[in-house]
Image (cartoon, rainbow, N blue to C red; front, top):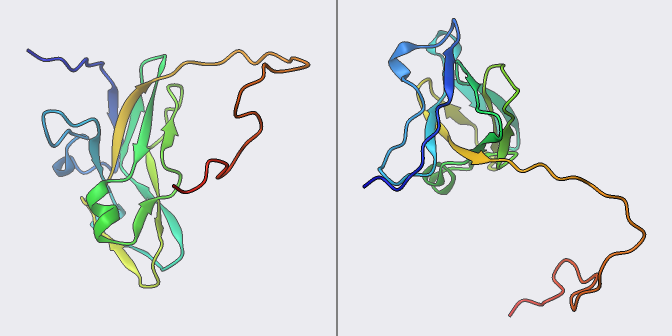
Length: 156
């Protein structure tokens, strides 16, 4: 019995897409995120210098169902084993965006890191969206926490 709900996301392969890369895919039966690969011009490498960030092209665009977004998240293994991260994590691809999906990668280290053509660089999670109706008021209800913010509960 499959308990995971599925929705169709249309994928447009752009002219520079490398067919050998395949579409984003889930690497295990229960995976929440589908891995997406770098699709680099002329199959060359991109160097991300220490402390810098850059856009990594994927060669694809999406038609995401209305009422959903795709969240771009780091791959845990890549983040653990290198100084690479998805800078705006989770990034959002809105349902009305039709351009190429590009991943903002950053290098937290001091050494240059190479991104290779076909490398799995991030994971994509399809998620429902609920839009808020923002209402201007003159006061808010009180709570025990009140205005207690950053670190107000301590460390232990």
